[in-house]
Image (tube, rainbow, N blue to C red; front, side, top):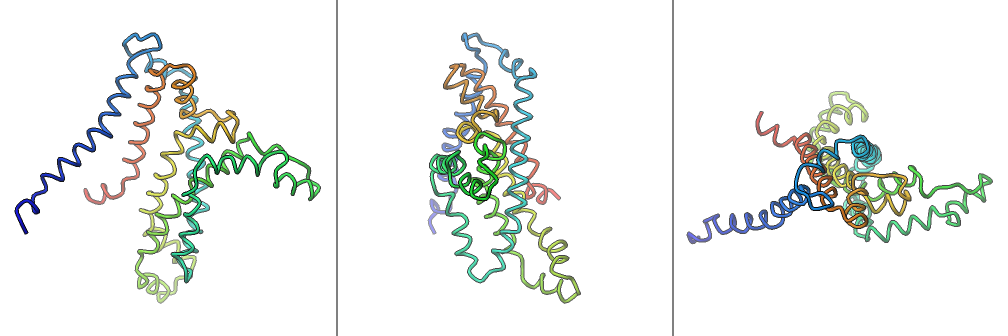
Amino acid sequence: MTREARSPFPHIIVYGAWILLFVIAPLALVVYYSMFDINGTWGLMNYRRFFTPVYLAMALKSVWYAALITIISLVVAYPTAYAISRTRHKRLLLLLTVLPSWVNLLLKAYAFIGLFGTHGPINAMLAALGIGKQQLLFTDFSFLFVAVYIFIPFMILPIFNSIDEISPSLIAAAHDLGASEWLTLKRVIFPLSMNGVKAGSRAVFIPALSLFMITRLIAGNRVITLGTAIEQHFLVTQDWGMGSTIAVFLVIAMGLTMALTDSHGREGRA
């Protein structure tokens, strides 16, 4: 092996250039624009404006909906991942579960508009059952349903990987000691799969904080989040400074979420 092959210096340069160009520079640009109001005046006006009741309520609503989407996804994803890990063709089933995430998000949104629409198949089925047509679109239910559908593969995959990595000898030992299937799941499998739960929660909660397209197409702007506000400020009001300020707080919230769920870092320091 040559000296050049052993040296990590070229890799450090490439990695550092990547971080500088695609992480640090965009964040610095967002912070720079956040210092200007709509009239081009430099200062902290946008940050003071963010801490008004309107934007604070919007931030709380964003966190609330992101938490709901994460919790519902976890409740559905964990038993699904556990069931898949216990099947014979688990890799095939996992592929079929993750496959919808490869479809374009806009196409999926429009597909649900057709399904939930007044003349869609779901309302047709409700009418045939005698329940009558319901307003399914532009509701919290439709927003949460579609958001969970979109994000749930990102919850299932890390949970499945964590469960699949558990040594079968640990589960066999629990059964030998008299533990039932439920007790084994509760005392052995679930604690050992917590890293997958945390990774899945991060993968769902962080993008759910900044949703904007689904809020427009599915919720009909009845659900207003920080992501929707950023879109409005950049594309409608042209107030790039306020949009950048909201983006700064979203980045901070995402960083805090990653720090709070970083189990590897805490294990390394223990």
